[in-house]
Length: 521
Image (cartoon, rainbow, N blue to C red; front, side, top):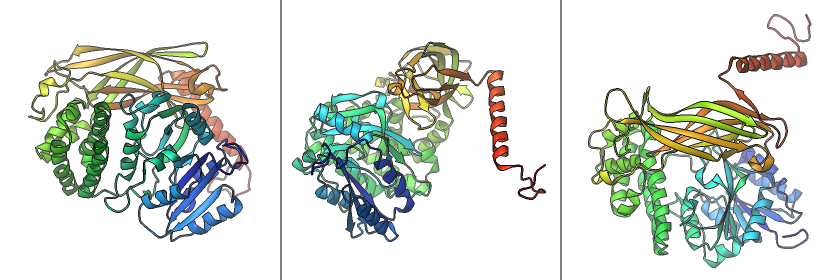
């Protein structure tokens, strides 16, 4: 709302526990949200901290009582209760749930609130930037207004870091589950909210929320989960959704998301190999019956081929074969080659070729477009009905300074290329991408940009960094492309390193080990 009103536009609810200095980036970012005085409030719900966090929060509230309030709570050990009590205390038109070690992008709350009001949205999802953790990609391909589970990949984002209309939460009694099971408490609230919401918006053209995995693994959910508890929580989340009897398309999107990311991804590649053998066996014991009993055949049939193979092996309890498949999969990678690039005005065009490789050899696909796997009998019954469609290459630019990512418009064709020896063919992707740096990121293009190809096929979505670095001296300026394959590019980088070293020496002086500080040549 406007300045001077008693009701803020946004209430930010932040659960804290022994947050210490990890809280500082969030606090600093709150002063750059583009809202007028009184336009927002922050409710810190402290879950019985034992360090100096309560005192730090009280000092923040004393310094800015108009915008900051603190709830001192008994320790519950999980964010659910602090978030629920924070919502009860909130006065804002909308509520945003933030974590104590994350932070907001500049003007994020103002943009989210404007979007919510203009589109009368119950939920607005702002672009998330990951720091040490994965974030949704397909969801943020572009802005989406007035969408729902059935027509947009909302299920890609199941954390609670979103803007919710407070009256919408109250009307439906939406609260985070307290008590056990504790895991996936975000999913239970967010999934039910998606099913009940009339309008959801996605604000993809502005970095709104920076999501962090702390280097000290201090996030409360960073510890290894107990498989029995975790999958009991997943069943509870599925029960909540199914009780509402949502449209079939919405239910399948949620179920397939949970099947892929909460169940099968834990049994693939590096995640499987990094897991202790007894723990992996426990996961398989939970996932196998879950696939058989809770996921309808059409849900399983709708996931990419490699996921179907993993589900089949889990159902049969074939832990050794899952490990064998994981050992092979860690060698699967994306390979991309820039065939040509040009700049015309402020528009960059890139032609590239890409494919998947297994070790040093191209990955092979059979006549149906399914990967040739190293595990016998891995294909589930009815596997001939599987389809490997959707093979494509996306091209993404990432701003070096902020880690923001943007998809570029592309055209892609695929062709089968016979390989020497063995069964199966290579699938080659030929892609053309274009980007206008006058309009990319709403013209905010100053700085350096990396370019990546993302090869998507059969259940893999793998990145290959291209040998191009794009630099813009000003926002919306002419892009200058550095092709790191060219000798003169390597020479320029070496010259820049030498110049930086000389500048540092000029500032600090040469303090070699046998020369006392302060002496000069």
